[in-house]
Image 1: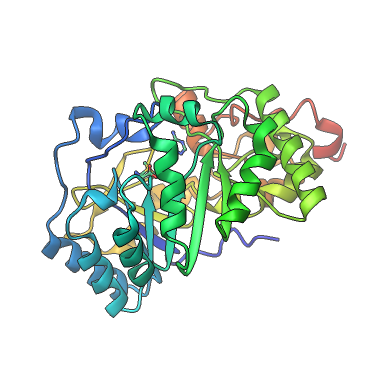
Image 2: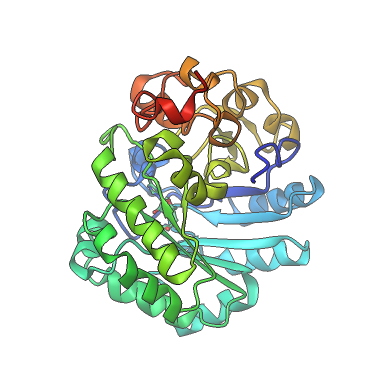
Length: 346
Ligand SMILES: C[S@@+](CC[C@H](N)C(=O)[O-])C[C@H]1O[C@@H](n2cnc3c(N)ncnc32)[C@H](O)[C@@H]1O
């Protein structure tokens, strides 16, 4: 059972959107609605500023630092920063699309990053290229997996997007096995303005059925990252696979820093919580605004009465906020009435 209050005092990691630039144009990407709204030319903070941030993270006793973006490998100083973070004994994560990982870069990643997280959308080449809007993406991602072999931990995230993902899940699993992927997880797509309702129930049911089959046949536990309400599927079954997905978002484990040094609620909710050069990091993490989101304040009435409340936490408050403009509405993927006999003690 996951302790959802695990990171109440301090975040598990600080995630830095280290550059606005990217070499892909993924059609679902939440960056489009935040810092990339006005183009992707700003390279973000300077090397000296980022080193200062690394000092702050280390002093705050946070164990992990993640370089994301945009595409972090577009920063020329990325390995200098990772090396500095290692000197401070921080666990380093590279959140990359893998497009720039040739052999030489792979070697540097192995030395300086504890976790190399590569986004891997599908095993259908044409589909991958069409999502990123760049030809040859699929081959580059596979090559990247090859070139980081030997890294302490290789992770892959797969956004739930490809319409054939449920059919191809076992093929994807074979790729993950072949490349020694330590942690593979599926990501619920966060709504963005252009696509406020990225999932439907039928699609989620098919995916969850395939995940359960995968688990039964191979013993592999494939988690869904980003919270899903348990009443999206058969609650007792879903409970087994969402695992620590509830911790991925909703201000529960990650503190997100935008390319200009502002703390924001999340990658997809850009309200500013403070500035790393002006405000104390841990004080910002414990601000009421974030506590309210991660706590029970915004739980809809139905969720308040549900017996899975403490583990499900109402699914995604972010999805509710983006879809309905309020944190306190039902998650768009919740169906409490469909499963009322299971959820509520009459
Ligand atoms: C914004 S990207 C930045 C890092 C790197 N350029 C990459 O593509 O992996 C970080 C992660 O966010 C995921 N992502 C982007 N838009 C998303 C959305 N709307 N919902 C959920 N995940 C999303 C991507 O698939 C990727 O795994």
